[in-house]
Length: 329
Image (cartoon, rainbow, N blue to C red; front, side, top):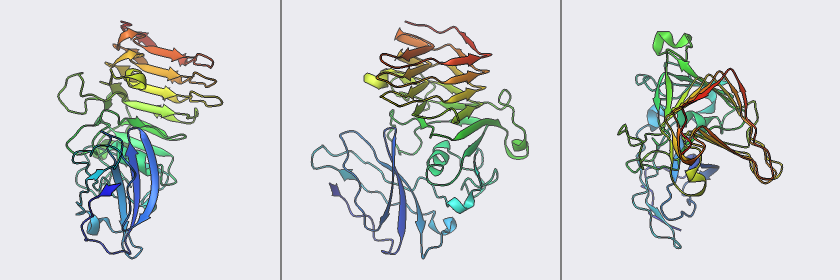
């Protein structure tokens, strides 16, 4: 591994807690300065979210100017152009009770996720924080949220909203004084794969908008519109433009609970709305209630759902749902 040195802005006593996001895989580690980042495959990015502890005291007001950039390459792979390692968010687990708040319009507060006034503006920050902190619920205000907002100027189609096991994510809240009122029909909370913001469903959209892997039915996604994913790649990147749910492998199971959601306007080679992978002794059987799955298009097969169950189980359950207008290719 070849690393450019990070600017000598910090002393050795500063501790970094980092979240490595590589594709849809999230790895956690704690390092002291200086540190070595993992080896990169060709074309992959590492995005690091970190908080800084100076003399064991965290003060985001004194650390929000961190802007170091490190370009990383591997001895075994060609260099990755301008891979930016930047401060993606600042948070302290002590800021949270059992909930984290997200509001794309909350630009006037501390943006540490501790309240509506100080909400994170990016859902990805909250999804990273719940894996480090004892938090079980994320509340999300109306607005449009994109999976890849951490990676600088170069979009990364591999990044999705990866929902951890046991986490409850609730959309449909209003802004400001209206944040006490939850109405997912009026307060549209949109998870969009249009990561280049060009309003086109094309080769620069996320492969998957949402992903879940080996999660239980206590994992709840409630009150969202999931749209504009384009799974037109190879292997799993050609499956599940809206949602890729993976419970494959002997003894594995992925059964998320999905309520009051609309999955619409997604494209994939297979399973444009959702692909459930329960092959090889696994189980991928999500539980839907009050949902609409419509207007999704598969290039080859299964516009709404593709349930892969070779040697395993894939059997979604539906209560009061509408599945219509999907094109199976």
